[in-house]
Image (cartoon, rainbow, N blue to C red; front, top):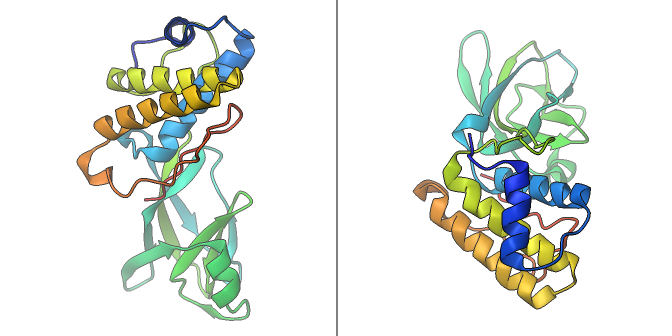
Length: 216
């Protein structure tokens, strides 16, 4: 668990940004937004989970668990009575272009849409699927709440919040530089296997949402 508390993140980011404090609730939202940004960028071992589903023949759609954040590109596994094989993720756009909604067979693919996982083809039996996914991190709700990540990620969180502070004051060029500092810190901390490729970075992060997404 991180050493810094929600209050620490607020104090450090405002001190280093050298800007007057803005609404505490808004600042807390910025801290939690960075925590979610990190979960989108880094495969944290402490957030890994497996969602096990027993399919129903003729039913392609199953609900996702409430703590689901994103799938891993490696997908998961599907088990029949006599074998176990890989099931792979693909985009909804590909699904809409290529799938046959009337076909029923052992699913090869899945995609996530509107809080559900959708298998393709539609299962023709009660197969068992195990999907590897990253859980949504626990957000900070009180001043003494600590980061859900190891202390080595505290500096990245501070840098990310600083970028959002500058953007809040519409200092876009400074915000962009601060966001690059955040990216540099994350690059340094991410495990070697995850360092490339890096997702496309928007030219100007926004205070409301500066998501840096990577899949796999």
